Amino acid sequence: MMTAASETHFGVRELDNEQGCLHLQTPDFDYDSFADVAQALVTVLGASVVEKEANADLHIWLIDFEGCRMMLKGEHYSAAMWLELLSRDDSDTLAFLASWLNKLTQ
Image (cartoon, rainbow, N blue to C red):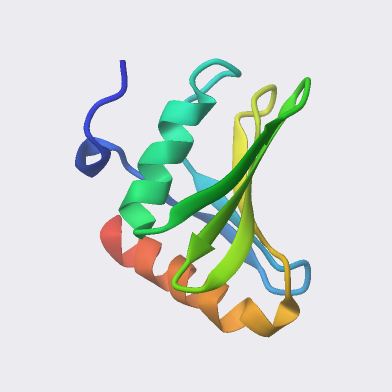
């Protein structure tokens, strides 16, 4: 069972401005536990979930962070989770989130 969001640690693996992706460090998850980990991240970010989709090996959530919509994606085989921009105009928001998550983990 997941612990409270405040006890779940997230960090930054890599900010790829060129691709508009923020690759995250997350607790381990599998197909069945993705929703718990992803919801904890959404809560930590103060974002909201707009839409959810699950495919065979990829979860895709459309989330809203202060008016900026982005995709939260998770691939359970590689235990990779990342945020992906829908618009390059929002790259400042992604950089802000990367900086903020780095501060949380220091």
